[in-house]
Image 1 (cartoon, helix red, strand yellow):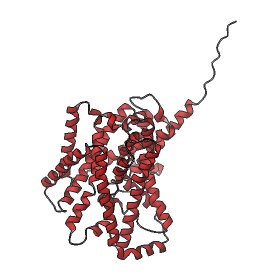
Image 2: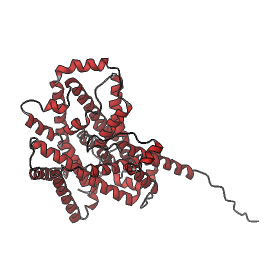
Image 3: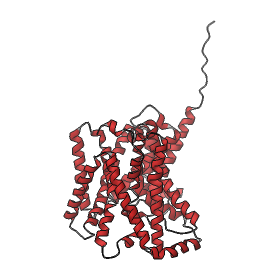
Image 4: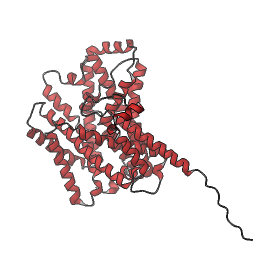
Length: 433
């Protein structure tokens, strides 16, 4: 696969299918689908759901994607304008590390479900996860069209399962609709931010990496179509459907789909819905290593090491990986914030590239290191919101990391442009007599 093939124009539907697979899978339904409960008033509820989906795309996808489309550069070439060459190298390593750990978590889940939820030995889980990793990485090396077809199949399966779940709770439809019509209270703002932060932890790093597809879009219209049909509509549709099912049934979607005599087979089918998202992750990891394609021995060694690491981690994932996964996710979120601020201020148009861009790196480090600051800082500033994580796969600091990095980079970028525009006093030149 050559660099020209990597930068060729592709139909916008292919990236949209890959992004839709991030939301049309059972893990997202079960872990994050309950964050926006079905409630009234109807208009306010729809504003919350669609507003949250649009905000996800606006924060983590649209600005970097529009930047890559306009400049016809890759995501990491664009990141060099914001972080410098050294900062971009660190970002590339963080992206690869995040994808390895994240894929290990997904393969551990898939292996458990394919083994019908039994407490299988760690060796069996590791072997199953290793085989799946090899197959899906091989599949990820195929063309974007082939990977998009896999995502299309898993998306269709996901939609079919959601429709089946809605039909299965048809007895509770009147109660759910009646409860929504008569309910007048609204969800508190803190609960909304908590739900958005948990959904962002799941989707934000992948949306940021998917913005690399911008360089392969013909124009801005295609970038917007990818965002609408790959992010907004799937995310909002899943949140609406899972919220309705939980209100109608009084239980989450797992209890609806896995009830009855065919529980084991239902769990295996639910695992298949994750294949499209895993294929996207595997392809993203290989793209992060694409800088080494000229050195084939190093490229294949690192790729083989990544696959082995995923298999090993998937077999011992009873350990807590949040201490590794959360800092890596914050790295990607902070980089997305810096690049979004630079896109708004126009810094990405500069022709020169530095080894270290001090504005971008400073904003990146302050946002990323926010959880490690002393408690006195939060007491003096009132910045602490008291939001805790309910799961190892959540990070309550994610949105605050984005907000701090974005604000610092945006203000410094505006100040730099303002100082550059200050007219210099005209120097008087001596005239000849």
